Length: 57
Image 1: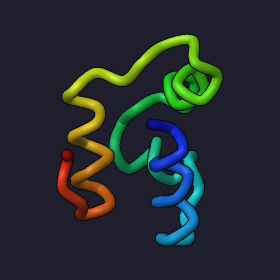
Image 2: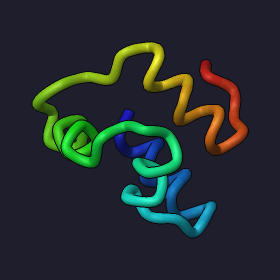
Image 3: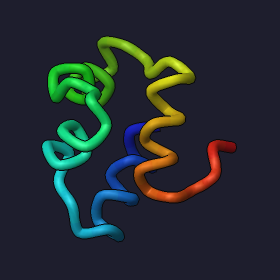
């Protein structure tokens, strides 16, 4: 999942910090996802999809 998130970041030219601030998802949470310490819940995935204006599929 995090690989897709990184692709979206690159395409949009934004940082994970900017996404964190805009969505209310803590940067620590994003880091945990990146390191595989936790997996994102559906509501947080939806916030990210909404931010990037992409479907959640």
